[in-house]
Figure 1 (cartoon, rainbow, N blue to C red):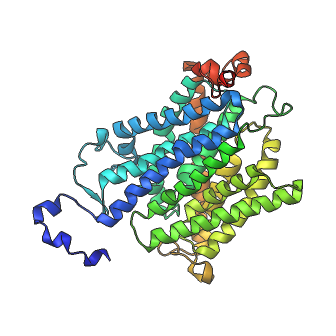
Figure 2: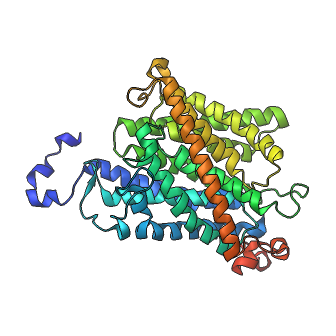
Figure 3: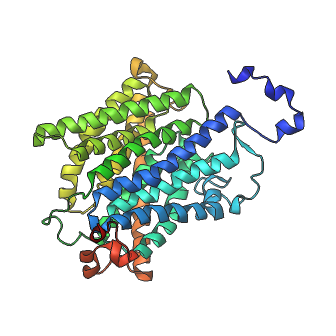
Length: 429
């Protein structure tokens, strides 16, 4: 339809030249940017906030809010440049420090680079915010801010460059990761696991019940995540076209399948389906379809979602016991395992030979065996890199600020001890 619009042809050539790219694509990406930011604030903040105990709800909300602020500033200062500016196979250069040289330049001839900068900023912001769930209710606020700042520079930026920047080594190999299976979910999931292992368990875990204090808040946040994820995956097409439409469709299908798969398993095991189960299954379906969203069709998405619910359900229930780890809000079993599963599944269901399950196909010239080998290489290399660097950063932050609050502060709750406020002032009611 946009081809038939006459208004641009009637405008002076100089005026039209000041707005590079396609207006429809730009409008969609601006919308997608708002949707992804909506995932972090308030979506993820509310989702996590409801899952902790009442004495820590405000601390989680503030952590998510502050991380978005810190990452936004670092993105402008230099992280965008390290991620997407021309560099080498490992890291970007410094030509976009302080976002210099943007002007009216366009990306792929379709969207202004300024819009691309902001869209990618929202991805960088939500990734360390996801890690919060691994150490919720026991880490110092100062340590969280320092760790998040260092982590987005030394983990997120290099991995994102490897996978999504032209010239990145995994990009050159043909890794299929449409919207962040490796870049977002594996890095965040592995980082959360490492942080949880290094911090140790919450006082009283697992013998003391630590139930979510407000499932209404969590379900509300989950709904916001579902809506925002359309921008996360659909916007990654960088165009308002059928590719984006298919990404949105398969995202929705996988989320619904993951929710129902998890619910069925929980119903069978515990005889009652829970609100926590259905929303966690939904998130598992969303996280697992993310790397494959641009490459598979609805049939593939249905199978991916069903498998995501099955695998992440069992990971949540059994993996934590095997590892004896207090990953407080199940970041690794849901996001980490989901990211691994989805990245591998992209190498299967992207095959055009699968008929109804077919999508856009493999990287040029690849067979299924070759593509799966590249997918496995991406999974292992990203997981190892994120794990090792997170461990080093945790040791560094421990020396600078210390990591964990005191036992007394943990008992009182982080709302009071870290922020001198309370999430709920029940005495005034």
